[in-house]
Length: 340
Image 1 (cartoon, rainbow, N blue to C red):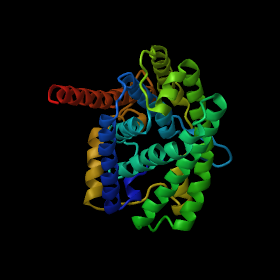
Image 2: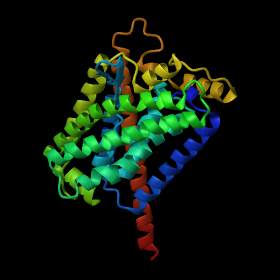
Image 3: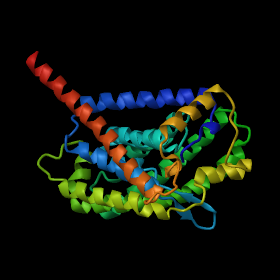
Image 4: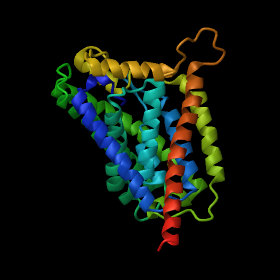
């Protein structure tokens, strides 16, 4: 559900970028006030890498000619808590937009809001967490994952419709567009809910303390998470490096809906801001659409390389963000102790 720049007016894109940037700043402040367990820092990195890789795999929605991929917000929030999760999904979307031209630069704020703010700050605390309040087991994880993912994706899809409406995109009439967006993203949500539940149940069986401590907002203490990290790294490499080559070629739910409403997936957007954003993205995106710019003579699939490189970049950015916040928190605490 990565929006392209042509779906937005510069005003709406600018406002949503400001909102998303504000939520990032707020998340940093909240994490600095609360203790960020240093053991969660590699989890931020590896889970961000996993979500990046998993988003490359579009699964077919039967009998529609459309496909979908996971958003990952609920998965990240269940593992990390809402604030680290939001920074992690933001890192995923920034890497995708800058280096792989997936989602427009003008639309980046909208994409972060639709896939990050809504899932991490609405669906997770209001739906996912309450279902697990009486304890975590496979059944509750399945119900919580399905309910929160479907709700988050429905709200995110509706937010896309509202953003295009506010932008005055006349090619996408409200009634027609919402009538296409909501049902297809309901189907995609069911698929993502299954994937999210499967991953969380797997992690919970290996190390139940990760999600239990996230639920209680406590640290992991002496709990070793090395096995979980290694397993997730291997799975991420498999997903990004191998399985991504078998993704569906059908348009995703947003593209399918745009085509159904406007008769084309390529809407025209004219103006200096659009041209500048496209020019910047053309310069930064070294593997647009997750492939080589020039694939002649390449010995390895561009999709494989993009999956592995993108996962690595996301690991570095999300992990670095967590580490920087942790070190800043540590320095502030030390300074407070020296100057009571």
